[in-house]
Length: 625
Image (cartoon, rainbow, N blue to C red):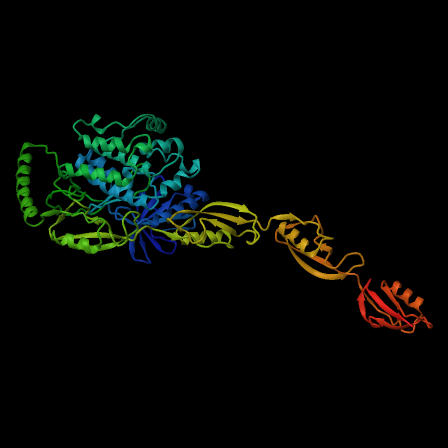
């Protein structure tokens, strides 16, 4: 297959090397990350999705969330971005093939073979659910099996981005996945961890029977069956299957979510108990390895890779062990059959010798929950060694204790071999940043940097935050939150508008209280003398009464200083009648003191003294001689 993107460098970083597959959602290329010098899978969204801005926003948000999910059985997401019209996702490149390819080639699996695949799928779901992720699209196309037998689940988060899209974006994409949809997804469009477990139960049914439980001529008819019909036990289609496998399927696929397994850990625990009761899985052949990357489409795409050298059969415990054995071939003549049988007998003897003398295995001890020192001691008693392959967040395993091991507990490991473990970092939590006073765009960036997302965005009046900035958030700043948790924002529209009350004629203290109760503040602009208002009484205000202003606005007021002062005139030697008339004319009150005899009838002293400023209405005492 050819593509015009081959040879181009996307976003200045990813050199497109070759086309791997095309699907309903994206085209996938093998590319070289120039910056880190590693080969990746570059998934580029189809133009009809890339042109939908709402979908691109959801896609980027979900991809960022999925990139934080780190687990050995989950396809890693390295990066996402946009280069012109190319909206892309940089992912771990898995060299192998899909579970759909395996089912298509070999048909129904034995129960023990199916359990080998189911175990890592449930491990991946348990880790994802603990971190707050729901896959929403578990199906064989999204389960990848690498050449070395590792099972990985792909496309976490992308199903949500699609399912939230417009009808034009998602039209036709549900056809390949409706066989695995839970009743609640069909009826309400809602999904939680139990919806993934329902799909995993359908997947187990398909692995052991070769078909899905509900089939029909249209997606609608299949969806109707999910809502109205129970999933039958697999043995109803394939008699002889163990009752324990029936029980796993029936429990995982009950129509009422409350009656299903309530967690992937519960499902996984039962699956491992059933697996321990079954014989070792019979091997089957992988003659030509393929290069596979999930495209989230209904039909898988594969590309041939170089054949690997054949290996002697070993007691299988992982997908590797039963994907590298002798291939059953049909012969056309009895002579060929005889020759083939002779060769097989010789190979079997040689393989038995190698398996028993060079490649003997021991069961992997269960070290989950132990710290590294404890696990190392336990493994040493079985002749095994331990290496720490990395760290991962866990909601259930304490920090510095082991979250998972490879090979997993109970699986076969070569004597004196090494067990690779992942150590818990404890629950993944992030502090809600303080985004008050920031614009919505800046707050979104801050939350994204803190591994959180924006929830609801509403508007409200606020006296402190400027209009267009964040007034408050829920949860509050500093609160510890899970990755991907939503933080609701309230955007300020500025102070709340209020009507200015009339405070003229009131005492200053009363006026201040009235303005404060209305959400306003007061400033005393000046004081003025008043012939009519007593000192301390408000003479005027600005803004005027009844004016609508923002809450918190300052109202300027002018306060009375009382009547203006009067300068006491010189009254000495002035006739009594004239002095009294002069005082009264100035608004002063005369107080006349006379002796027993006043022959001159003139003022000989006064209090206050001349040229003294006194309030209007003050008393001036004069003595008459």
